Length: 256
Image (cartoon, rainbow, N blue to C red; front, top):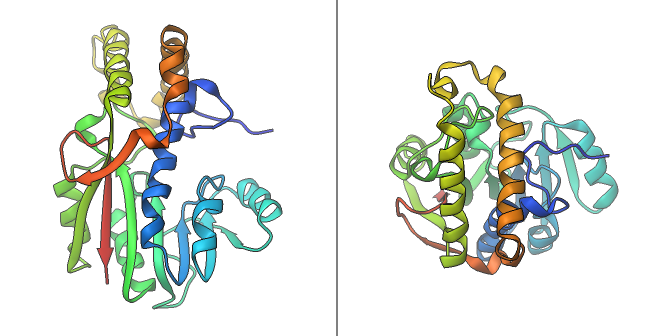
C-alpha cells in the first residue's frame, strides 16, 4: 500500500491532480531531447518511464527508496533500476547521452556536488534536463526542501561545471494560474495564524508533519470549492517557455 505525503503527488488522489499534471508535463517537454543512454536521477514511482524510456537506447532509474525501486522492477522488467543516495553516482565517467532529474535538486544537500557528478557521467556533448520549483512562485516554506532557486541562481550553479546552460521554465495557462491564485489566497489565510513566523524559525524536521497535514487540508478544500477546475487541468495546460519569474518550475538544459 502506498503512503503519500503532499510532497509526493499522486495520480490516485483527486486533489493532487493539478500538481501531478504539472510534474508530468516536464516529461512531455523532455521528449524531444531524449537520445542514447538515458539516466533518470530520482525516478520516484516512475511517473515518466513509459513516456521517455522507449525513446532511448537504454534507461536506468535511480532513487533512494528501496520499496519504490522493487515495485518499478516488477512493473518495467525491460529497464534497470537502482536504489541509493546520491551524490556520488555509481557510474563510470562519460556513461550517458541524456540525464533527466525532475524535482530532485531541491532535496539534495550537496547541490554543487550533484551538478559536478552530472557533468562527470555525461558523455561529451551529452545533455541534462533539470527541473525544480521556481522560488519566486513558492507560496510557503517547504520543509522537505533543502533550498529553492531563482532562475539566475540555478544558472550560476550549473555554469560552475557547464559552459552551455539554457534556462527555461514550466508555465501554466489561465486555468492553471486561476488555481494557483486560489491556492495563494488559501495559503495566506492559513499563514495568518503563524504570527511568530514559525515556518521560517523552526527546524525542517519539526515542520514536516504539520506542513503535510495543512497542505492536504488545503488541497482537499481547493478541490471541494473548485472541483471542476481541479479535475479539468491536464498536461496540455502547461507549456515550456523562456525564463520568466512567473514560471512555476525552472527547466534547465545543460550540455557538456
